Length: 224
Image (cartoon, rainbow, N blue to C red; front, side):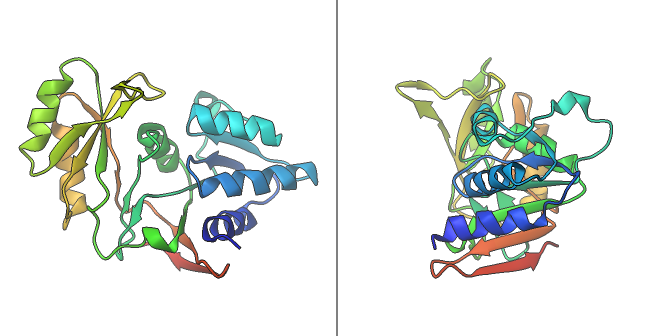
Protein backbone atom coordinates (compact mmCIF):
# COMPACT_ATOMS: atom_id res chain seq x y z
CA UNK A 1 0.00 0.00 0.00
CA UNK A 2 1.14 3.55 -0.73
CA UNK A 3 2.65 5.23 2.36
CA UNK A 4 0.40 8.28 2.07
CA UNK A 5 -2.69 6.13 1.64
CA UNK A 6 -1.73 3.98 4.63
CA UNK A 7 -1.33 7.00 6.92
CA UNK A 8 -4.39 8.79 5.59
CA UNK A 9 -6.71 5.83 6.01
CA UNK A 10 -5.34 5.06 9.48
CA UNK A 11 -6.34 8.53 10.68
CA UNK A 12 -9.96 7.84 9.78
CA UNK A 13 -10.01 5.20 12.54
CA UNK A 14 -9.94 7.97 15.16
CA UNK A 15 -13.23 9.43 13.97
CA UNK A 16 -16.43 8.26 15.62
CA UNK A 17 -20.15 8.87 15.33
CA UNK A 18 -21.38 12.34 16.24
CA UNK A 19 -18.03 14.09 15.89
CA UNK A 20 -17.41 17.47 14.36
CA UNK A 21 -14.05 17.40 12.62
CA UNK A 22 -11.64 19.57 10.67
CA UNK A 23 -10.45 18.34 7.28
CA UNK A 24 -6.98 19.38 6.17
CA UNK A 25 -5.52 19.89 2.73
CA UNK A 26 -2.92 17.85 0.86
CA UNK A 27 -1.98 14.58 -0.78
CA UNK A 28 -2.02 12.45 2.40
CA UNK A 29 -5.19 13.75 4.05
CA UNK A 30 -6.79 13.22 0.62
CA UNK A 31 -6.91 9.54 1.51
CA UNK A 32 -8.41 10.33 4.91
CA UNK A 33 -11.22 12.27 3.23
CA UNK A 34 -11.96 9.47 0.77
CA UNK A 35 -12.08 6.93 3.62
CA UNK A 36 -14.36 9.16 5.70
CA UNK A 37 -16.63 9.46 2.67
CA UNK A 38 -16.88 5.65 2.55
CA UNK A 39 -17.69 5.53 6.26
CA UNK A 40 -20.40 8.17 5.85
CA UNK A 41 -21.98 6.04 3.13
CA UNK A 42 -21.91 3.15 5.63
CA UNK A 43 -23.79 5.23 8.21
CA UNK A 44 -21.19 7.32 10.07
CA UNK A 45 -22.79 10.59 11.22
CA UNK A 46 -20.36 13.49 11.36
CA UNK A 47 -20.00 17.11 10.28
CA UNK A 48 -16.78 18.57 8.91
CA UNK A 49 -15.13 21.95 8.45
CA UNK A 50 -12.78 22.13 5.43
CA UNK A 51 -9.49 24.05 5.54
CA UNK A 52 -9.54 25.06 1.86
CA UNK A 53 -11.76 25.44 -1.18
CA UNK A 54 -10.00 22.39 -2.63
CA UNK A 55 -10.85 20.25 0.42
CA UNK A 56 -14.42 21.56 0.46
CA UNK A 57 -14.87 20.37 -3.13
CA UNK A 58 -13.36 16.95 -2.39
CA UNK A 59 -15.46 16.50 0.76
CA UNK A 60 -18.67 17.38 -1.08
CA UNK A 61 -17.82 14.88 -3.81
CA UNK A 62 -17.22 12.25 -1.11
CA UNK A 63 -20.64 12.95 0.44
CA UNK A 64 -19.32 14.36 3.74
CA UNK A 65 -21.71 16.85 5.43
CA UNK A 66 -20.02 20.22 5.85
CA UNK A 67 -20.37 22.85 8.55
CA UNK A 68 -19.40 26.54 8.29
CA UNK A 69 -16.54 27.39 10.64
CA UNK A 70 -18.39 30.49 11.86
CA UNK A 71 -21.28 28.37 13.17
CA UNK A 72 -19.17 26.45 15.67
CA UNK A 73 -20.15 27.06 19.30
CA UNK A 74 -17.47 24.76 20.73
CA UNK A 75 -14.10 23.40 19.56
CA UNK A 76 -14.00 20.64 16.98
CA UNK A 77 -13.49 17.13 18.32
CA UNK A 78 -10.43 16.69 16.12
CA UNK A 79 -8.73 17.89 12.97
CA UNK A 80 -6.77 15.70 10.56
CA UNK A 81 -4.17 17.38 8.37
CA UNK A 82 -0.86 16.72 6.65
CA UNK A 83 2.56 18.39 6.92
CA UNK A 84 5.51 19.20 4.70
CA UNK A 85 8.04 18.50 7.46
CA UNK A 86 7.88 16.96 10.94
CA UNK A 87 10.75 17.35 13.40
CA UNK A 88 11.69 14.97 16.25
CA UNK A 89 10.09 17.55 18.58
CA UNK A 90 6.81 17.20 16.62
CA UNK A 91 7.12 20.71 15.22
CA UNK A 92 5.71 21.10 11.72
CA UNK A 93 6.14 23.07 8.56
CA UNK A 94 2.85 23.33 6.70
CA UNK A 95 1.53 25.44 3.85
CA UNK A 96 2.97 23.77 0.77
CA UNK A 97 -0.55 23.80 -0.64
CA UNK A 98 -1.12 27.42 0.38
CA UNK A 99 -3.83 26.78 2.99
CA UNK A 100 -1.71 27.47 6.09
CA UNK A 101 -3.88 30.23 7.61
CA UNK A 102 -7.14 28.29 7.58
CA UNK A 103 -5.29 25.13 8.58
CA UNK A 104 -3.82 26.82 11.65
CA UNK A 105 -7.10 28.49 12.60
CA UNK A 106 -9.04 25.23 12.43
CA UNK A 107 -6.35 23.12 14.11
CA UNK A 108 -6.12 25.60 16.98
CA UNK A 109 -9.89 25.35 17.52
CA UNK A 110 -9.79 21.57 17.87
CA UNK A 111 -9.59 19.37 20.95
CA UNK A 112 -7.17 17.06 19.10
CA UNK A 113 -4.89 17.63 16.13
CA UNK A 114 -3.85 14.52 14.19
CA UNK A 115 -1.08 14.89 11.61
CA UNK A 116 -0.76 12.38 8.75
CA UNK A 117 2.46 12.07 6.74
CA UNK A 118 4.54 9.59 4.82
CA UNK A 119 7.94 8.74 6.29
CA UNK A 120 9.82 11.07 3.92
CA UNK A 121 8.37 14.10 5.75
CA UNK A 122 10.08 13.17 9.03
CA UNK A 123 13.33 15.17 9.22
CA UNK A 124 16.06 15.69 11.86
CA UNK A 125 15.49 19.46 11.82
CA UNK A 126 12.98 21.78 10.17
CA UNK A 127 14.03 24.13 7.40
CA UNK A 128 15.03 22.29 4.25
CA UNK A 129 11.46 22.72 3.00
CA UNK A 130 10.91 26.45 2.33
CA UNK A 131 8.75 27.93 5.08
CA UNK A 132 5.52 29.42 3.65
CA UNK A 133 4.56 32.83 5.01
CA UNK A 134 1.18 34.31 4.04
CA UNK A 135 1.34 38.07 3.48
CA UNK A 136 -1.06 40.80 2.38
CA UNK A 137 -0.52 41.81 -1.26
CA UNK A 138 -0.10 45.51 -0.38
CA UNK A 139 3.60 46.23 -0.01
CA UNK A 140 4.58 42.57 -0.25
CA UNK A 141 7.95 43.66 -1.63
CA UNK A 142 8.76 45.47 1.63
CA UNK A 143 7.52 42.52 3.69
CA UNK A 144 9.72 40.22 1.63
CA UNK A 145 12.78 42.40 2.31
CA UNK A 146 12.08 42.31 6.04
CA UNK A 147 11.72 38.54 5.92
CA UNK A 148 15.07 38.33 4.17
CA UNK A 149 16.66 40.23 7.04
CA UNK A 150 15.63 37.37 9.33
CA UNK A 151 18.12 35.02 7.69
CA UNK A 152 16.20 33.46 4.83
CA UNK A 153 15.98 33.72 1.07
CA UNK A 154 12.40 34.89 0.43
CA UNK A 155 10.73 33.89 -2.86
CA UNK A 156 7.25 35.02 -3.90
CA UNK A 157 5.19 31.96 -4.83
CA UNK A 158 4.00 32.06 -8.43
CA UNK A 159 1.36 30.17 -10.37
CA UNK A 160 0.99 30.32 -14.14
CA UNK A 161 3.13 33.43 -14.39
CA UNK A 162 1.32 35.43 -11.69
CA UNK A 163 1.53 35.57 -7.88
CA UNK A 164 -0.18 32.61 -6.23
CA UNK A 165 -3.29 33.84 -4.37
CA UNK A 166 -4.57 32.03 -1.29
CA UNK A 167 -8.24 31.33 -0.55
CA UNK A 168 -8.07 34.45 1.62
CA UNK A 169 -6.84 36.69 -1.20
CA UNK A 170 -3.26 36.91 0.06
CA UNK A 171 0.19 36.08 -1.33
CA UNK A 172 2.65 33.45 -0.08
CA UNK A 173 6.38 34.07 0.31
CA UNK A 174 8.39 30.85 0.57
CA UNK A 175 11.28 31.47 2.95
CA UNK A 176 14.36 29.32 2.44
CA UNK A 177 16.01 29.14 5.86
CA UNK A 178 17.84 25.87 5.30
CA UNK A 179 17.77 25.22 9.05
CA UNK A 180 15.29 26.25 11.75
CA UNK A 181 16.79 25.28 15.13
CA UNK A 182 14.25 27.22 17.21
CA UNK A 183 10.83 27.13 15.59
CA UNK A 184 9.08 28.51 18.67
CA UNK A 185 11.05 31.75 18.64
CA UNK A 186 10.90 32.13 14.86
CA UNK A 187 7.13 31.82 14.62
CA UNK A 188 6.69 34.65 17.14
CA UNK A 189 9.19 36.90 15.37
CA UNK A 190 7.65 36.29 11.94
CA UNK A 191 4.17 37.19 13.10
CA UNK A 192 5.43 40.47 14.56
CA UNK A 193 6.18 41.78 11.05
CA UNK A 194 3.52 44.15 9.65
CA UNK A 195 2.17 42.58 6.48
CA UNK A 196 2.58 39.01 7.68
CA UNK A 197 -0.77 37.29 8.13
CA UNK A 198 0.48 33.90 9.36
CA UNK A 199 3.39 31.51 8.92
CA UNK A 200 3.60 27.77 8.34
CA UNK A 201 5.30 26.80 11.60
CA UNK A 202 3.01 24.69 13.81
CA UNK A 203 4.66 24.47 17.22
CA UNK A 204 3.22 22.58 20.23
CA UNK A 205 0.07 21.80 18.27
CA UNK A 206 0.25 18.15 17.12
CA UNK A 207 -1.36 15.64 19.47
CA UNK A 208 -0.73 12.56 17.33
CA UNK A 209 1.58 11.94 14.36
CA UNK A 210 0.55 9.13 12.00
CA UNK A 211 3.44 8.06 9.76
CA UNK A 212 2.93 5.80 6.76
CA UNK A 213 5.75 3.67 5.33
CA UNK A 214 6.29 2.34 1.82
CA UNK A 215 5.58 -1.26 2.90
CA UNK A 216 2.09 -0.19 4.04
CA UNK A 217 2.84 -0.20 7.75
CA UNK A 218 1.86 2.74 9.94
CA UNK A 219 3.58 4.12 13.03
CA UNK A 220 1.85 6.47 15.45
CA UNK A 221 3.54 8.81 17.87
CA UNK A 222 1.98 11.04 20.51
CA UNK A 223 2.77 14.70 20.02
CA UNK A 224 4.73 16.76 22.50
